[in-house]
Image 1 (cartoon, rainbow, N blue to C red):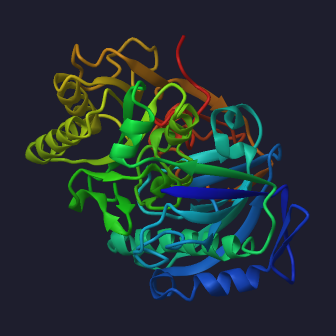
Image 2: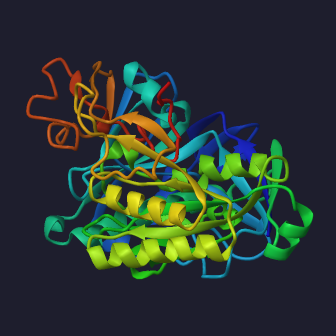
Length: 432
């Protein structure tokens, strides 16, 4: 499959009477945007109001609690559409041409389900730990209807749809805009790849998806990943919006929709494709709760790696604790099939860094890339402006009673920062 991504650089966002893109400026009519979002029946049912705000890099702004981050895109040529199975139909994506509004994102925030969400600081110490502080963010602050606590799944779905519809509305503005840069990505069929790169190692990417239920969900072509068996995706499908986030986990290692759209493992493998390796495919597998489901999924992962005659596999995780078992099961079974693995994870090694980093381990998992220790304590300075609400800072994962200080500063673990220890490596922390 061959995908051409055209990147339209957005340097700033401004609210306006007319929605358009002009010389790198994104003008947004907030009434038109809000009306488009509320065309969705579930949004109308569960979301009472949406405030729209803008956060720019370097501003003294704190966004919290953050639910999702999404990059606006539009399919301009070829099959399918953005967010297949959710916004567009289920036609296969990953080919043709897609325009990307780069340098910006849609962020959903406000009162959301559960307290396992995070913080994006646009300046100060916290900004150094999240990639989203470098983007111009259009923030939707969602206010739910009364009684939403008893309908968690319904409200989570509505909040997710609000963000996706906003990204769809903005992405459409780039349909007829000439991109500043164009990149083409293409992979081979199995036989073609063997014939074309006979002397290069065959490498696949085992992409683990959060799917533990209870608001820990990821969607592939609109299907909840926990309802699927381990399967194969063309890497360009991942780049073209086939996978979206629907989970509410620790903010530091949560894969937002933006992470899936811009997966750095996929990008790095494409950069090496045809040079030092033959990038064969992505294998997506879920992270389950029950032992039998974990065994089944990891068995299928190793089976597919062997059937594809891979020489090596990169395995990335999402979450921690229970998913550590899935990570190690996948790794040791792939290794036992004679295929070398490298895993990407993060650590929960205690605030002093001396505890066991993962809840599970195996001698075969001997090549590891770490995204950092999520238990490290950090103090975030007060910000001049808050987008969202600070009501939940003391109870989000990584916070504690008294995390929010009287002066507006926050003492908490890195867990509270969205993307701080991301397990795709989409972050600034590692180990030497």
